Each structure stands twice: as C-alpha cells, then as structure tokens.
Length: 130
Image 1: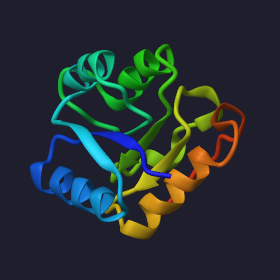
Image 2: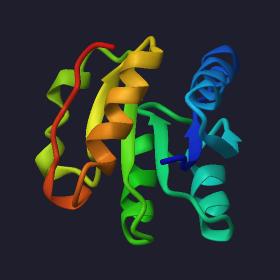
Image 3: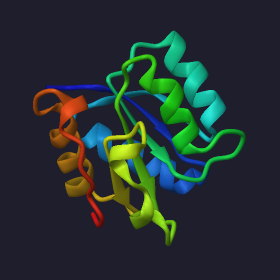
Image 4: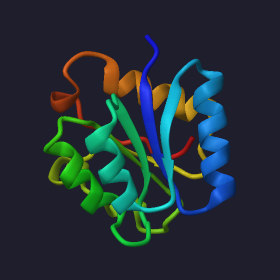
C-alpha cells in the first residue's frame, strides 16, 4: 500500500531526510512544509492519507495542526526530539503516536504500519525511539 503523506518539519535537513526515507519506502510526499499553518492549508486542498508533523513548528505547532487535521479525517504522527515528548498523552490528543527523532526508515515504516493496520482511530499507541 502506497500512501500520500504530508511532512511538516521546520528544520530543512530533517524535513528532506524524512521525505527521502518515505519516498524510499514507495510513498509520495505531495506536501513538505516548514510550519503547521501551511500543513493544514495544504491538506485542505490536497488528498493526504497520513501526516508526519514535528511537535514544535512555527505559526502552529504539531498538536494544534493535528486538531485541525482530525476534523478532515487525516491521521497524524508527531515526530519529536523534544525532551518532554514522552509526556504527550496520545489518548488525549488528536494524534496516533509519537516517533522520536531522528526518524529512521524502520521507525517510519513501523508508524505507517501502525496507522494503516485496521481502524487507525481505535489503535492509538506511542513509539518512543526509532
């Protein structure tokens, strides 16, 4: 199964690395942006199956963007190197999981599998480490 994935990461090198890894897995990345506002706007006009978003983004952080995207039915995986990432309570947030930076191809593959294996809204969990 190949997906249309959006990536929001303010660090250009990290964003480029995530996009390349996702493309190496066979997915397309029609949206690759540096802030949450552009992520939400892009997802409103482009068909997207899954989002990987940094926790701390300019203009609108990843959790705020995830709230908007949940209304569009788009699952969100937060990618974070933030020291408090473990404190995000996935069951109380509009996200599917937290993937620890730096993102690896195995971590991205596992996150995609987790979200796409059945009803993603009922299979929330967290990955800490990639």
